[in-house]
Length: 275
Length: 275
Image 1 (cartoon, helix red, strand yellow):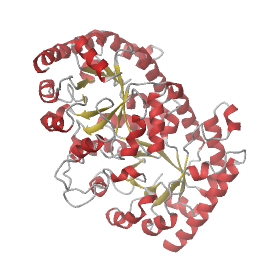
Image 2: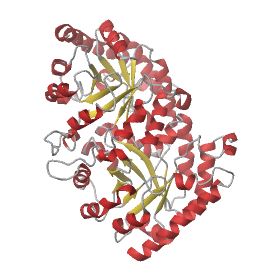
Image 3: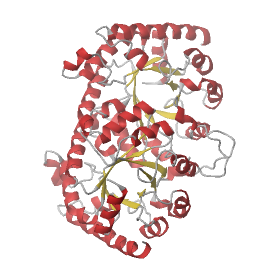
Image 4: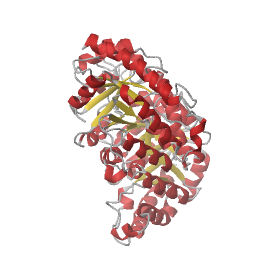
């Protein structure tokens, strides 16, 4: 999916919501546990219900990997079920030396090899250029590089000051601009980091930002939108738990849709106001 | 496996060799491709052949993940085949926010959940404390934290100077000492970084170091051993391609054993000299 296609979907649905499919057997409604593939049944119902309000879906791979080979089958079925006009994100946070990152790229981009073909993957920057470039070699696919994450641990290294006076995450943004442009590269910036968004936009004015941390983690959609939006929206705001676990009864999908619609309505307002 | 157990194995086999099971369908001998599970058949033969010379096995997870659910089944069979007195490393380079890292820990440590139970996992430090701690909560399991990797990309961020005058990787070593001790925490230091090993040993004198990059990547076993060894050896030196792809004919296992034995003999000499 191109940047233009993504922006077209955002305008059409008046939404830049990404629903995080962090599907945990310990949290999904009990009545689903008797089905053959509870993870897929849950995801299917969530996708059906939230589709009108959502432009992207982001399965966090840890939830599937925790179930071993079975989890990979649920993931494959889920990805195949997501309509093609939705942007798909493998939230995998991978990264290895060059030839090995190439294999992770095959795992998430090359359907013939692994059965999966996501539009994008999240990548960790610690190992540098050659750990990221193999993902960028896949035409039409996106890398979403971790910059400033939503967790407390972001203070440990990402917000350390470098000799140059910048934070490490600012160096990551600057350095990575040499690796790819805004047609291929997005960045993860936690919603809990809204105060840094204005500065981040000075470094990467045109790139899309994937913003997790709204909802359960406490980030503000209003602030994120005010400081982060650019001329082509430039934001995908993720919500996982607040939407998918809005209820754990038989009405879970209906409740998820209601939560997603509330977020979408708020987003429609910001799109009118800031764009 | 405890640190003492690992050291006991090293003394018994006079070896601190780790064999990297980077098993790629494009590189294994053609005659194996007709079997039901070529990846497992290859690994099985490599394990049988190299076992006398090796104390650890390290499948790089990218190679298995690239094959989707099938790859996870090969990985599970491989792990089950490795004798219990060998140290097993899931080279996965994972890391996510706290609750999600907990799921990755389940994926590689909790057999009931995923089918896999490795002794250790490699973890990326960029997301900080709460991305690493969930792995350390598994009793008897190890975290091997990326510090200074063997690839060129290590120059991009790991070797950036911080405001304090230290390199980022030195900060990672120092900070992580608060998270766990040498009974639970090892570090990845590339063999191509031997010149930094003496400095690294000042920060983490007692921890085991996992050293990839000997062989195909050009690191020197002699230098690594001279600057990196401590009183309990403290080194696991990994070789992948140079051993497992020593031949791509029907003699591949025999040739792998010969290569492993050459490395082991050299290691026995250093154990005598430096320990």
